[in-house]
Length: 230
Image (tube, rainbow, N blue to C red; front, top):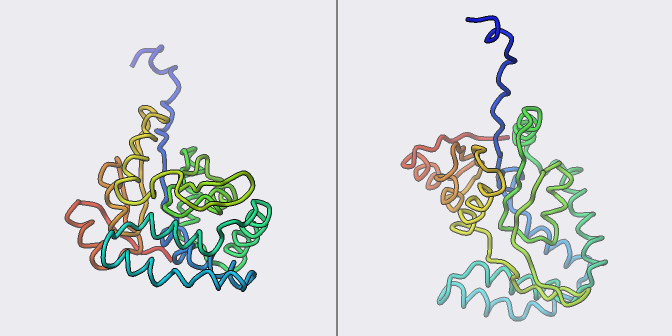
């Protein structure tokens, strides 16, 4: 080794983009249903609008199997027409309650902090709606949040989808877009369901956490390791 070579500083460690799913990965369970049911408890008169729910469920089961459409229909029944101020105030309470009631997995938070300490880019990628997911991303210190976006008319929620439902293949599209935002940066993806495997297979590294038997079997076939986060 020459004197010049020995004077060179050590190479900086490789930075990653760490992409975390939300429901079942960072949290113990789904967030959308508790979000909607708690809103109904605060606004019980809105339960009268749920008379359409059986028809939406029947259409989903018997005809289209469109999860995005069903999600939009239920959100419109429960929260359609509510003002941005009302929804934002409720979302702030909901996100605070997630932390206070220990609805976030400690192992997931530890992994998040490990990536933060390493200087990695932190991305939250969720199919849940932008009514509250960006608040969770902000509260947990994510650099970027991608989630399903909804339509508004002025200051009132319409509830139809502004973007595609960011699940399955749509998360793969999001992953491809993230590569344009972090060129040359490898991506590690964390998810919990079989639908998450769509984009996890195309990450540079991936880990399926808390998956059911079918998801773990599918992950094994794709060479993706599995773990249980508590």
